[in-house]
Length: 546
Image (cartoon, rainbow, N blue to C red; front, side, top):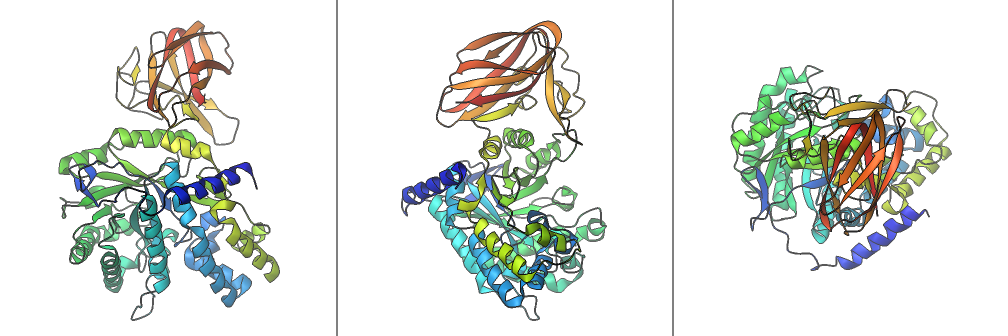
């Protein structure tokens, strides 16, 4: 067992012991108060969560599959094709039991996250037969999750990721016919309403359930679905909310815009006094671009409602640090997507790829099927690999998401409090060419040598500075390693802390890393400032290690 896996197992054991029933403080219902989310006693809560994707709604990209395995029903067909229906049924029962367990929730709480967003597939809770029947297994799995979350003090936002008939017509909602049949077939809306009423009735008294996410990423623009059906979206939300309120008057309800949650033109004034408005935020531009969320902030202020990012992630640590910092500076909670996936280093946990998996993935792309024995062995190994104790932990990802040490602060991720608080530059009327295009601090590209991949840094001249905030969980003394190069000589800079400052002369026009220590950190929030004394310097990152 690797050291990271051993650490995970030990930490999980400690959490299970320390968080016995009655150990955690009493859980309170959450509700909206103006633009905030608060407890019943009035304490403000900033959602810092994780998406539990690929568990109740498997997604092909997390399996390394091609088009023939891009959604749950196609993945299920692949498994049945390769090992037979009976073995496939056993596989799926065990997969759902192993993928998210109490150990996962204990670890999520121990790492410092306060909420989870489980992605539900309606088929796991309601059959597609006519008439539909409720499926006990789905509710039992959700019951277990809620019980674990209650034990460890982690809120649950129940997410209808795949509605009856599909709300996108794409792979992400398990759409059966590549059409958003939730909107084209009124019977599917009847089914969705009945399912939400069933869920709300079951969990109406569970305070650990933060709220209900009525519909994930409905009606994309690029397929024409938004144009054709978006006038139905808010009326459907009103219908679902009214039905839920008959059985559950307490829980928050969160609604997403059309076009992957981000087109809020579909919304009029709020139709319930406990609504949270949700958008999703992914940065896939190259060079990276920290896209503005001002339109969502303005909406929240106009209607005095909370704004929440239901999904963000799927990139790199620089973006993770920058985005969660950006959100929280504007009173926006978030949920990182996803908690774990196969053979990937950009999520908190990675599932090791089973032996022979390339042959199975090849079958999802139209290549020859592996033998039944090979496939069975690979699927059996997957059932073991998905258990948390067998996954690989990436602490750098978690520390970037939560902006804490040990960690690397990319220098373009200075604060969001504006001029003279987060930065000072000689020309505050300028605008950066990319990344933070609404700010005057000059961002520069740093070539990595990798195809289609560059990173950012900043350029500062004499008397210019940028400021950075980070958390130190233990208040340890750190060493700061700063990657930089001189553009104009002679050059020197200061690193300023809360009570100390360090001055460094530099003259290398090639990239180098200089160390500054010791950097005393207080427990909790800390602040650093980079200030150029003379010359012009490009800064890439500041790495802080105890």
